[in-house]
Length: 231
Image (cartoon, rainbow, N blue to C red; front, side, top):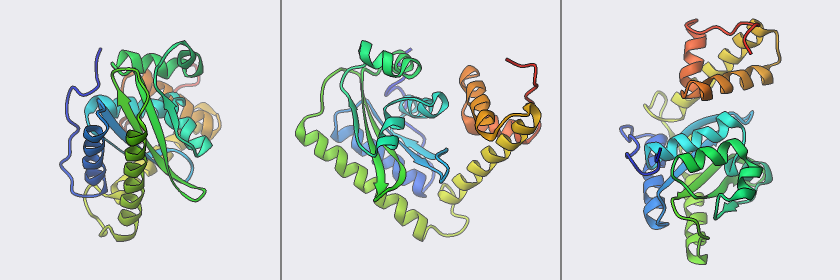
């Protein structure tokens, strides 16, 4: 099931999300990549806004947070780039769930770059390639430059986005609020911690092949309920 590069990502908004999608498309072209994705974190580490050059890359980007593993997660944790030129046996052992998803999606190499200001983590930029191989020194420099542009775009959006601007960070804050509300509801339904509630929501989203946001909305709207006797 090759996903990478099959369809362009939707870019209908003119806010920060649209700017990041255009950035991903430009980075994919400059780096000879099949796709590029960006994920931005909320203060508690939950993924908020995301953007990608194409639908397949967007799915692989989200899967890292659904599964809780992958180069992006490690780059955020270590504050350093995580470069995987080949998803070989070592990568399968390190990220068993995500590595399989990457291969199923048609990618063979992933390069993750943290987006940060000092010690503050904003998110990560991921470069996907369908052929194994390292980034050249020039490509590595370009990737780091695109990461810097992404940081600038995010900071400018936080400081200058007009209130109520469609597609901007305000909309993503609303999405995160829905996820937090869903976590609280599942916590009460199952009698578990907030962290365990998020794990259950992630697992359901992965098993049902849906986004975390869509599942969260169903929980908040009471179309979906978690029962204690569920595995």
